[in-house]
Length: 387
Image 1 (cartoon, rainbow, N blue to C red):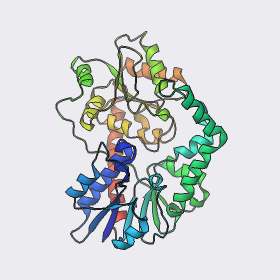
Image 2 (image 1 turned 135 degrees about the horizontal axis):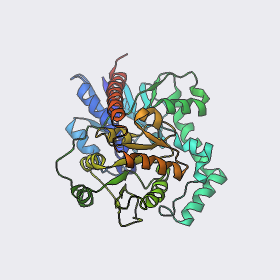
Image 3 (image 1 turned 90 degrees about the horizontal axis):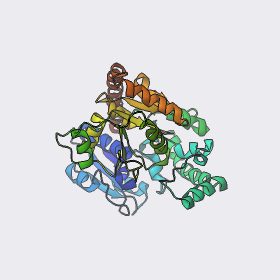
Image 4 (image 1 turned 180 degrees about the vertical axis):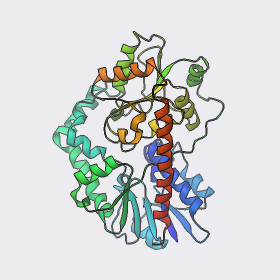
């Protein structure tokens, strides 16, 4: 069987983040599961760069995968020329710029979240602002896009393009949480009778190495500093502003407490350490030695960081919205992402007793990772099955 994998997530947004990790994990599973009679191909776009996490060309060489360039020809032509029997599309929205017409083979297609639809539905863009992340001009431009309906038109164009294939009877459609499945069927009635599989995002197989490469992180760990940790702080929907404000209030009661943010772009206090990039191995050290992971996000389709922090029994202080309670379960210390005082309460809970959720963290990590392993195998079988 000829199988077409998806390497576009390796390239989008410099290939950094959960999308690239997701595509890599599925590709690894497929490569280890196919037989000698199977031939692997993978989509990429020559007009995009090489991702920082994974080099799609190196990966293809190592696994004897033939690359097909989506910028050179429609997907249907690549399918016909290479006698493809099944196409795997990891992140459907990444294909909104490509021709998806005329596809007659089996398609396994994922939508992980529809935050761009929901942000226009609940108008959350009107209240999200962090002056450290965007200047007044960019903020006003964003508001104008929301008020004028331009953002709504843009997202409508994306989903008008990808939804016919996702909703097609022959397509095996999946998502990564019960929350996203509910959101999809709520916003797109065409999916009401569609069988959408819920398959948790696979765990990332990242070893923790003995040495810490990043000097700032190594200094904190070596000096046994207590720090709160937050990832992807440069993204508005991650809501870093809330944590930064509450952290400054916490310093009055916990003057030795540090804050580590990843990619926020600035520091608000001498004990606030902002790091522009961490390797996967260093990220594991950051999780392991943090006093708590703080996950202030307004929106998640799945949410890797809390699960990855659970591996080390690091307390997870998480917002109580969208898919987060579903994934974190009883292990989380919850707060509303709209109320600073609620985050203040949640952080004081863990600062008073770091082990307050140790049993729940251990149990929930085992449950989620078991589900992740099982669901990855299910997705692999959906892709490589001849049925």
